[in-house]
Image (cartoon, rainbow, N blue to C red; front, side, top):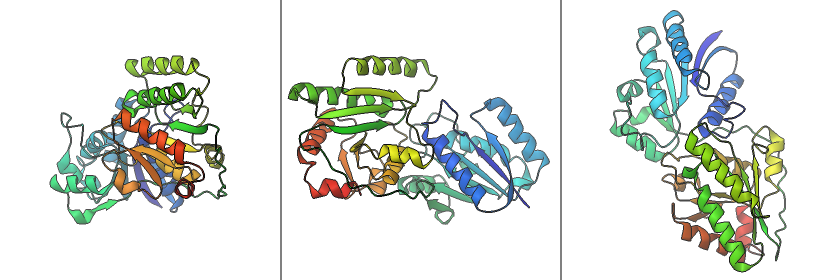
Length: 330
């Protein structure tokens, strides 16, 4: 039986909206389905210092057929560096680099030489692939693969969009200012208040990390939602947990992804909407054009609140009986 070491941060009950963790879970499940293998897991969602000690001990005492590291570039390169301290493990590492490469991490220690020694590097966009070639990776050892999602047998729903009533929209990401949620709340309130009618009903779904500023922002979001009957804070009550989760997502008319996050690359939330058959209005994050196009999505300029406002107005004014909008939901 082959022996595999899997190194990642996996989802927890609280951190179930973190893209890196969810993607790593899906990768681990895919490896398990590939065949019989003894898989040792290093899970950095647990105590990271104990997990680092565990990684070093396993790398020293055990000999693996394959080692799979599924992390962002900072934590991932450190794990690979530690693994490469032991000669018997070299040439066995597959690195799934989650996120937009090293953008935003210029002040962090990144072990590019160790990444270049990996057996294979998997990235989420051609932009990241090109940037890693500049850091010493051979183009032939790089594959571009944005995400792994389980196959579900979902019925394609024929949407009947309300002509005069509100559109139901969802924010489905971490509760974080960098994700643009504050802009979305401001714009939905502005549209509904200016029109003196409810054009959009927004559900806010997402998890909260432990940083004090994020906890404070979450409190502000809850307070804002409590003031308007068309804003609903649903938190973790809707999260991806099997096929029924996607059936629940199908109740929405539109997903809005207003992210300003510099590490945005292949957002799991957008891929979840593909599975559910819900169109997305997305900010133009750096790699958006490799994942989305005008045939399946709407766009607004990243970090441009006025453009977000204009695009939501356009969508409302043209959503029915527009064949384009119906096409984007398929």
